[in-house]
Length: 270
Ligand code: SAM
Image (tube, rainbow, N blue to C red; front, side, top):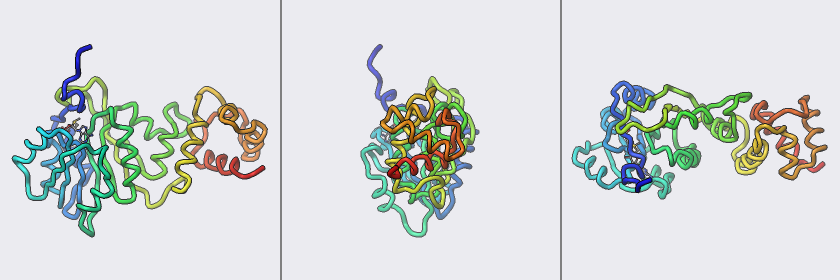
C-alpha cells in the first residue's frame, strides 16, 4: 500500500449533491439568532448556505490551504478558525464567540476516522448547544440510534441517547461526495434534552464503564459478563430475579432504565 495523500489523511470527501446539502441545511434550521459552528467546512459546500441564513457561522478547518480559499470569499458573518478541532477546547471557543442570547448549533461532514472523538466532543459541549447535525458512516449511525433488543444496541447508544434525542434523518450514497468514500453515510440529528433521560450526569463515567462490562461479550448472559468483571454471580442473579427478570437475560435485551437500576442495586453493599 502506498503512502496516503494529505487529502486522504484529512478524510476529504466534499459534498456536491445539492439535494443532500439542502436536506442538511433544513435539519440545522439556521436562523438569524443562531451561531452555527461548522467543523471541517472544506471548500464551503455547507458553509456559504449557512451564512445566508444564520446570524453567525464559525468554521473550524484543519487544512490551511482550504482556510485560505475560504477567506477569499468570506462573508461578514463568517469567522474561520484554522486548526485541529480535536486539539481545541471547544467549550472555550464557543464561549469566546457566542453572543447572548444566541442559539448554538453544531454541524459537520467530518472524516469518519475521527467520528468517535467528535461524539465525545459533542458530549462535552452538550449543555451549550441546542442541536447538532453530523454525517457518520452508516454502521456507526445505526449504533448511535439503536433501540434495546436490537443487534446494534450498545453502551454508546445509551450514553448518547441519555443526553440527546438522536434521530436518523436520511442516508447518503458515496456518489454525493467527491471523491466518493467507500462506505455509505447517514445524516443524524441530535436534539439536546432538557435533562438526562436515563441516568444522572454525576454517574456517567462509572455507569458507562459498567455498561461496557455488561456488553463485553454480547453472546453471553448479563450475569456471566458481570461475573467476569468481578461481581458475585449470586448477587447479580438475586437482583435480576428481584426485578422480575430471567437470570439468563442478555444486556442487549434490557432498556437503559433497567440497566441503570441493576447498576444502582449492585453498588449497594449487600
Ligand atoms: N464539509 C465539507 C463538505 O461537506 O464538502 C468537507 C467535508 S470533508 C469530509 C472533511 C473536512 O474536515 C475536510 O475539509 C478536512 O480538511 C477537515 N478536517 C479533517 N480533520 C479535521 C480536524 N481534526 N479539525 C478540523 N477540520 C478537520
